[in-house]
Image (spheres, rainbow, N blue to C red):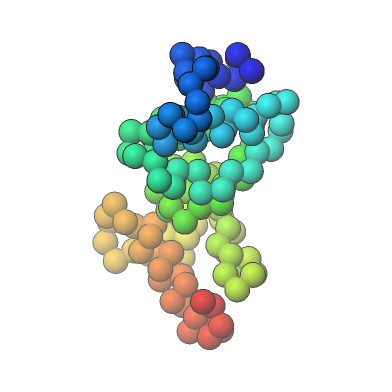
Length: 140
């Protein structure tokens, strides 16, 4: 436990009640709890929802560090910036079916954004869903 708290930067908060932690600290603690027992695969849902920008980047760096050590993460997220930064590959699931599996670059090649921008992946994602809706008429 001490090693995990150190790894997530919470050693100095060891005796602080959970309710007194910031959003970023709570997320880092959640990651530490998920890593107990050194699992090969960790599933995290909406990793940085409600976390301020500084805490969000701390959490991202933490996940990146564990990825470098060989831990595989499965992230469930609506945050395309997070997906683009942390995921080697991702899947788009709609209507309970997997509609796309690949990289950010794969999606942007298939559905080029109208112009290079900070929102390029999001633009490609929206274009993908629009195309899928037109083809199948069932995607919500």
